[in-house]
Image (cartoon, rainbow over all chains, first blue to last red; front, side, top):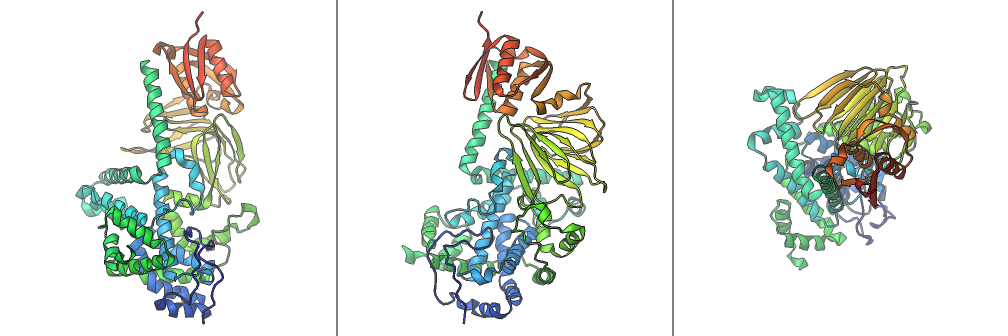
Length: 236
Length: 337
């Protein structure tokens, strides 16, 4: 019935952003019963197969992704990109896990990497490491993903209420400054400032915990030696 | 221990109600692939039960169909071959843009850096290193020490040419026949927009500086309170602090700001303090003095210094100072007679 793919979990899957932690082979008949039908469709019409995956998983995957990235549009594009790659690179021929496993893992890895690089964006000293590709440093323990998005949610939750409302309108719903200003009867300047403060607050909170310790130390060392130097130069 | 991992526990976990010890238990349990499969099965159930919002499924599927139908096989972003191999041309590019909307929406609406990762290539210099580059449109850039320039992996394309600079560089930008703008973006919320011209950009943590030699340039800058655009004429110099506050002046001697590219330095009553900043910017050398007054000593003249040691020799000889060096730290005191 099913063509058993040659690759084991230990081999690199074609998609970027998917890193295999375990190298145990997982050969059995196709693992998940509820996906048997989709698997069968892939045998004859891959295009239709991916569509079925959309119908089955697009909603929960986006719901999961938006917890990390905060923006509906971004979440949907991120997930769509994974489906597209799944189709283009014919990953359906090569995987040896359930579709669900592959898709959820990909989404989580991409969201994690997206957040990490977004936090690093303003740490200009870290620029060197941004080019490691989507495979860089995924967490070792699975619960770190939950921990990450819960920190994101908590950070948003800690915003003052008015600021949070503006933040969500902009980030989650994707509304522009002018739209928000009109809807809430505020000036565009006010909206700008509120968003600036909200973003700064969230990023600072997240950076404290989620920028790699190594680089955190590096930044701190340089910062403290700068302070020391200034002190020495001005007050020696 | 394993038998304690239930669906209820995982649901609590997804809701943020598990303790660190419970998380550790879950981590260990999920290391087995079969359990990880179960993890995702329950995660999927949870997400279906408690969605964050309702997606527009039909819209997403439509976009998928559109893309799949027009798939030319050339837009797979996994193949990072260098530019000239692929003759996409402007037409290919427009089909790409019209149809692969799900990929490009991500690129456009996603984070700035996410786009960077797919499309940009970085060139960096170390301490004391100076690098010359020629971009795909013929523009040339000389990158000063401790700097990075990010340049599109493929061609610039037919729209505005974008590069990202962290640090300092001289630009000599070619004016294209299609009048494409060239924009230098920096992490200081300052960008510089030109058509074709010669200018220098300095964008480091201590502040920013733009010097225009030839042509015309528009600066766009942002700070907490404002957004501003400033036009510059040849010879204009803009110096900004960390908060992007600063002023526009006219530089009588524009070479001061660009000669570093030839390892030459023009000093006009340049104080030791400013010299120490140059040492830090370009060589990551930190300076300590034993007498604050020394910082006001000045240096004038044009000098060549090909390395930090030459620079240090220069300073100690001309200003009659003793410089003791320990790795990347220098200690300056008056020369004992």
